[in-house]
Image (tube, rainbow, N blue to C red; front, side, top):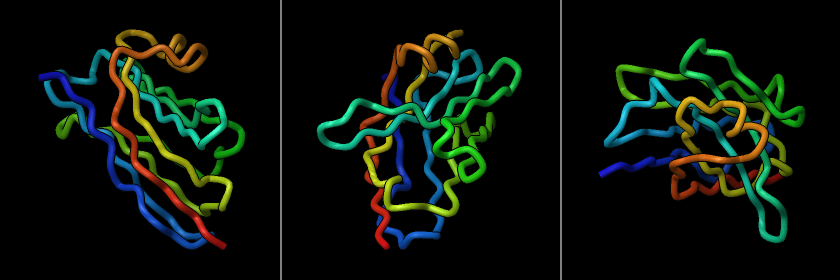
Length: 125
């Protein structure tokens, strides 16, 4: 069964780090753009970062640029989001998503074929 599982969230003090994982099951992400989004109650889902499997290009929201790094491990069929220098405003449920041959539609329109279940990240000061 096709499945996208995101994990790695938790409770962390401001300035700390977390690494989120997005593991694909039932398909390989080589032909997909993989992105991370986040959402808090009452707000629209926000783009965080995306990676294009075709050429490895990456995109980051201005709010996380310089602090977050997205990467992939094809052998494990997993994409990671390393989050450093975390701030309380980073608190949200983080979701990974996969869009086949569609980094632009994923990044611009938040269109994806698969979504993870979400993992909670809470940053306290």
